[in-house]
View (cartoon, rainbow, N blue to C red):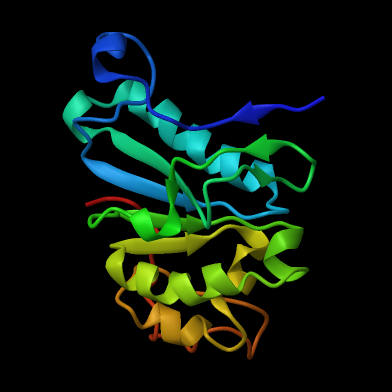
Length: 177
């Protein structure tokens, strides 16, 4: 059995007064990168959190949710479920408030050279970025400190002696403006 789902926003005219995601007007854009063997829980959990927040926010403050992938074909999650991205990687909007990289076996078991080449410049364009669980491996070996110096409100902390030295990142990780 095959399922295909997408976080495509509903047409604005069709959701006036109803619950749902909106294409416009959007106050903040959240973009999630998709790749083969992604853990779909890492995708759907955060996206649902923003979608639920949209139910309680006025239209002008709602999140615009987008998914991005290397190509136009469906991406197969680690459970076998296929997902269609809203856009290709190169079609990342100019203004992205939060770029998220989910985890899963695809983040550490297979080579994703296209995403690995694209991600550094995409992170520089995004206002904030984050990795969910093993999505951090797509940052590249030894690159976490470099990424955190890009003026994003994140601090990686690991076991003592690991991660980013204190003060190199910021102490908060939130989405408040």
